[in-house]
Image 1 (spheres, rainbow, N blue to C red):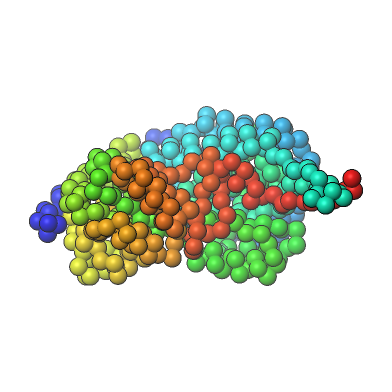
Image 2 (cartoon, helix red, strand yellow):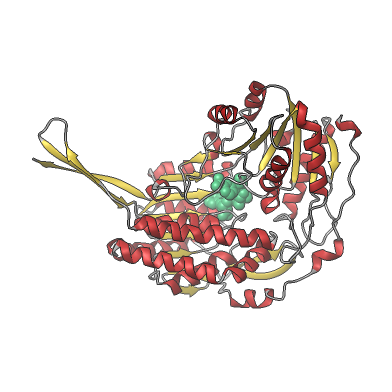
Length: 506
Ligand code: NAD
């Protein structure tokens, strides 16, 4: 009976959140903080800058230029000027440059991870994982770049030949969120460059430094000026609208919230610009009675706590079958309460801060709402006084179906558990959301596992695993979670290509 669970004491040590990494000053000093346009580092025409804050300490760590519509136009000009040469560059040469990006990222993994941790707050161990994942998109797409091929055949009428060639879609605007500052950018840039496109990247203002550090690295790897341009702005709406209105821009690839995605789709529709959308999630995590309990707990910790829960694939609703529910809830509470919370760059930290104070307030609002509706707190359920934007790892049980967190992304270290009885009920609960990005299923019965996977409305499902992302697999969602796929065999690169059909007589 969940009511008999005792709240478990917490281990968070407020004094730990102040520690700074010895690498941090050097890493910050190394990053160019200016717009990267046409291979040049320049200030914004406005002269204004945007502050970048370390979410572990709330200290100002840098500032980046606040680009204007004129700067965005310069970036489109640069991408357009570079497009002809890059498209004509031999696939083998493009592949070698992408491979060099992978090698440089791998060599500099530790300083890149420190930078990610500083501006995003995530634990260094998560940041190292992100760098490895992000670099892999360059290696994978270096291999894709030389395998792109078309089709050639005789028409059924026997009167003509059909030749299909695949061409780069053109100039691409790429917009990325703050939760994976390296990987969300490389998951777009690497396939775009493999396809022969030139790009303008607008990273999130909360985490712009990683994008600029990577821009310098691409240049060193041999990416020609203008092929990748990076700009930061506090006015993403007007800048994006201006870029989409430029007839030379042919593609928008966006990762972020569903709300902003909808706005951008409407903007792109005005100019019929091709769109790929990686949007929000609300992943169900289903544990059947016959699951391996320890494996399910291991998986839940990864699916919930990777990136402190700030992941679009994070387990947002945990459904445990009645027979395993109590043991699972107790086990998860024990593990969550033992998580070491602290500054991202501190070696022992397992869970860093949230990105902003607003994010903490949202998490707290969702937790209080669930409790008001009858959920029980097994551990956590409170914010930390600061400095830093910390929220204690939290486990809730008896979370009712109408709780706001059952329908909204929590984006934090909060695991809401609900009970179910039958397989049909689990599927019905899992699908009771407008989202369809990731899902997790734990059962020892393979036939049931595959049956349930077949009925869950989701772009990606992990069966007896807590991690779903893989550069070699197509990442993306259905329903309100988006349009298109990133990564995977041909899927990712295909988003940046157009088919061209040529008819010839026999
Ligand atoms: P967000 O939508 O607020 O911002 C994402 C990016 O869009 C940022 O660069 C932001 O500056 C920019 N932006 C904001 N308003 C804009 C506008 N009007 N025009 C153009 N650009 C605009 O999202 P966020 O808070 O940065 O990221 C969290 C969200 O991203 C969550 O919903 C999460 O699920 C989602 N996400 C999805 C995936 C995926 O692959 N599906 C991956 C990571 C994050």
